[in-house]
Length: 511
Image (cartoon, rainbow, N blue to C red; front, side, top):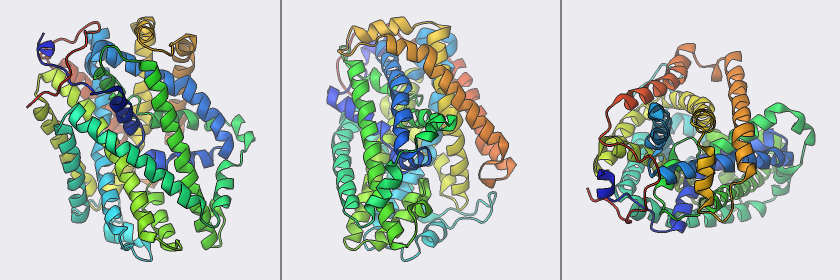
């Protein structure tokens, strides 16, 4: 078989794989999404459903994807095809979602890179809101007013693409792994400094009280549990096809369940640290504004590019340093996630079409970079917001649900995968793992999907025109499914292995 004649890329060591997997899981959303989700859903009490979701859904699905990739030595499409030829489309569906996510994700990294530069001298001025939406984005007043290209955004995005492309060209061990070994420890140090600095600011305690004071009455609210399971699924990089691909690069004798626990708990610890840092500085900002913390809390893009520059302006000293620290952390988190999202597509294309690594990187990065130009226009923020909403709320959760139903109930290979895990792992995938994947996780992911749909159908998202939601939301969500079947219908250069292949010699393919 050609794949055996051409050695499959492998991690140089277990630590490199774990750091790369942590880097994939820790992304921009961990810093700007989790703190707000926790605050909105019971504060300190949110930790109860969050950890239950972690144990009953996050870790089980993460370990399942490790088992799939490691057993069948393939990216998601060929891993699913190894189980059933008619289900290769599921892997391409996941890759399609990842592809469209990375097209706007790289633009956000471009924003972060720009603000990293602007931090030197706090160049956003006294009105960060007007600077971001006006000077920087020059945002169009209407959804369908695409406007021209905002060249400063395009330039920063191009630099982000160049760095990401270079890392991916270097391969798994010399590119992704090496970058993860440098960036993840650096990110950890930066976050610790960020948290320590935040905790020493006046008013920090007020922010922490708002975040951590438990409202146990919220535990009776079903939407809180839906939020917990949604956040876990979102933050662990499952259903992206990433972890299947990353696990396929592991040597044959690898402890999979132990790695899964390390990655999941590291991601959780990072989210909690980020929440402490974010709310401590929000407490300081509220004090400076003579307002309540509830009045200044925000999330997402507004937190990163409007609220934090305002906070940095108010700091008693070392303003530029704090800005460089914050946006540097966002930059490192974004880059390690971006390379992982792209790698799953690169691996899938290589296996399907028999391409050399360089050719696959050129095709995947080239197409994604072209699409990302849309988000560098003056109307780009509108399209980015809608695509992000649909790809995350419906794409990832729904593909995860279908993945579990397929493995557990359609081909019934959960016991086989359990055996594969337990032959190699110190922590056994026991009854808790089986029960979670057969009963708890699919039911709750189904509930999350229904809740999301009900909320979406009740009123148009963001006040955007229906035509925009149909094209960039529902239309794109349907398109990625169709593309999955199209790719399945293309004749493969070779068939995937039907069972685990003995460990290959480590090495990177030269183009």
